[in-house]
Length: 251
Image (cartoon, rainbow, N blue to C red):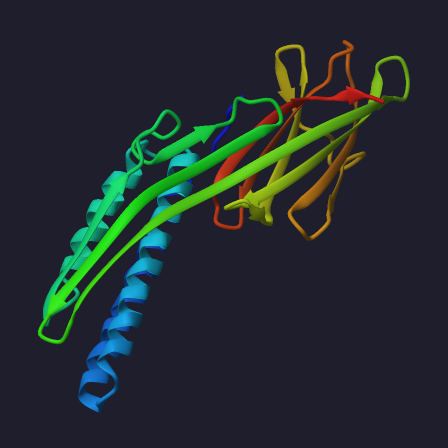
């Protein structure tokens, strides 16, 4: 089951604006540094670092766009615009940003979405960047990989309350780049026949936040069969969407 929102384009525009402002502000600091006698190497270093931070924002915004139902080639299209923007930012030399999208068995054009495995879901973007800056003052060359990955791990248990009624617990673990992360939104579904339903949140649904990327959802529902299948859909704090399905184990 895959349900995605269509807010990705708005998220992407916001990320691109933030990245552009970041670099423009650092460019201004670079210019001021020249007139005030600040150390050239320090201001250039900060400028290069802010190009890297801006690149990260563009990759995050692109992944949020794709995972929420945007164009599958959004990452490529947005990086082209970002590269063109960078090329026009340094007036005292040449600033060139190169990128290579990862293409492996898992990644296609830098994007990997896999929400099909039992208890596991991943939304990921991987880009290798090289930024070259040459001018009167200095020549700088830096390369860096950018791996943005939101991972969702879920497991579920249930216990019978009556003939067809069960209490279901779903443990949810969210990670950003393999580190615990918080979710901005979590939606739980359970399957009855061919239909996916949401728990009655006004009556018997609770969601416990442990504050470390782990959540526990609990609800009571009627199941006409022995099998209990659940699904968790989340958006992390970067608005990257991911989902995972699992078969609940009776205890």
